Length: 237
Image 1 (tube, helix red, strand yellow):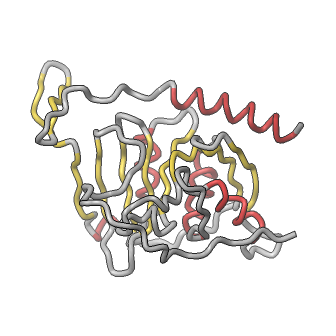
Image 2 (cartoon, rainbow, N blue to C red; image 1 turned 180 degrees about the vertical axis):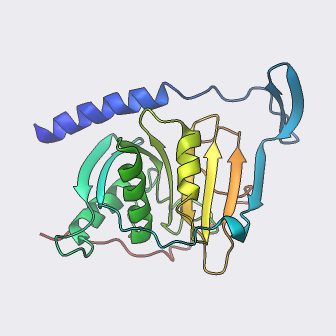
């Protein structure tokens, strides 16, 4: 009964969030540009607009430890969880992490990997800040090129119920102490958040393409997945 109630509430949340989504741009041409208008003024804009984040914009103050609370619905799976990622002593709760890993599983292959725990902490900080359920658009993607942070289980695409993606994008940037990728998708109204590979600078972008999963870079030719990702956690009793 409790699980059914969670799913019912989560479904209402999803409807509330997706109802705000804007239609995909129909005037994108084969050169990757489209006509963008603000009021009566229009200009030609790139579908993908990205840049390295200046180091001066990185957060310098230490991040406060989040509550650990997360209320999450996986959009592509129709599953929901309300849990805390920490044990009473403040250490990570492996059982909770395993439940989230399962929700972050690849929607195409069903593969599960241990998602970077710090990403879940950022997810909890976002939940603490907005105090509203979060919808997971995409998590781990095994059927992805190996340059993607989704493939390395260190990225997520999310929406926050009844909240503008712009507000989520703005807040996510305040959490970046370096080596994070944060992108906004105005057409489908979600925000991509990831941890970059060691040594990579933080990156920001806006993508008007409307596709269902954010990568943070223009797509090169697809590469065969190598499987070199963190093994899945196993739930504990």
